[in-house]
Image (cartoon, rainbow over all chains, first blue to last red; front, top):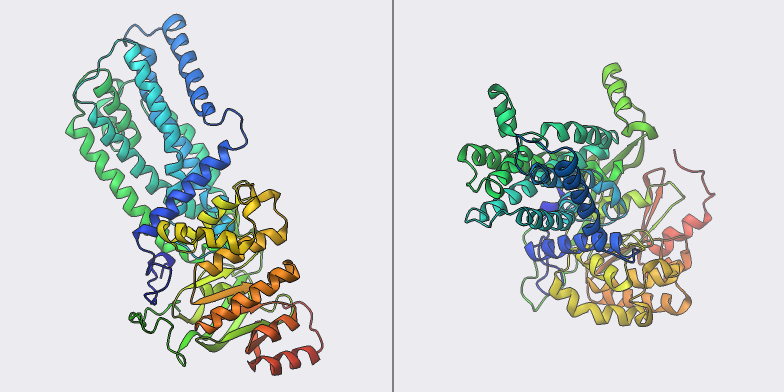
Length: 273
Length: 269
């Protein structure tokens, strides 16, 4: 039986909500996300500005290189094209790294307080959403600066980005609990990040991928986010159902699988930290 | 095999009788055993694959072996024993942090545990931020926490330092904050693991007073400490663990007398 699903009998006058209602879980989630922010930025004088400066410099240098030095004549505005790929990938790699180590990073809480442990990897992913939002804001600024216009398909971006967050939560649930039992998992995750970098169409487009391999790309939600983002931002068209449906299924399926795997392995977490 | 914390029908839902009725067990251990593997490198993939390939069983030791006891509401239990006798493992099983390998743990009501100094606290967060985090970990909602916040700070006596990072606190101050939160969560069972000795006399007396108030309200206390005088003062029952087994369970003074008279064994193995 998992700790999270314990429902304990409570006197009505008790200060605790029976079996941890949604109110407490949200409050706990919020506190964990805030904790991550505060710890990261408290000791820096520029604080959250660093999260702005880093991607800004990265995007600026990319734009310079791929417009002045190595423009790609086959792809108009190659720099923005690359940024559309990099932003979802960055969120993938940052949130997966943070999610994988989340249980060990929070071991003083996991070992000594009884609380639903699945909240930790999810909080780690959500804490990274701030960076994701900053990068999205910068991406949109670059897109507009390159002369693209806002179009009525932009709301689709919210949908695909939400799906990416769902996908990352599911992956992190699995990798975090596996990392408790086998500390090598984090290195596997790091290695797989490098592989993923080239399996996501960042420097190339889906059209350049041979037809028979395309299904693999469609089943990879991160690749699908990249393609959908380009469709909406650069080509002014809505993402195709053939793109959205597999992406939604894989993302939600991944979250469901993550919860199941986590529930199965949760029992001995505290003893293995 | 399976650990089960009993999910019993809620009692005391009528406000007239908020405390669990006396005479009913709030905590019951039934033949609880807990083992730990003996080697430290078990969390490496290489190790896991090797033992899977060679089908070798890692040697285990029993932290708890067939432990059974029962605690009623408004009781207060002292757990005594040498280092490594299984006291902390017992508390971890009671609080649901660890799952026993066999046997049953039944809990009625909510548990708040003070397991280690600063557990659930982060050194870079301020006292106030840590109070919020801790209260949410212990199961409070935002509304309850905000309602209790001033009383928590007041009880801790740390109002002047509450917006300073926790790393600037002394261990006594951390204890004050931790205890204040745990008490304000208003648990049915309060678990204290070897902590009160850090506080100064004044705060210890305040804690003892607060614990007695909780007991009068029908709440249950489980306390691990090496300060036997404190235990005699606080507790009415005692459990003596030796090498993971129950050596003695009964009225506090009798068990502690026997424990004091017994020659000290080495670290359990």
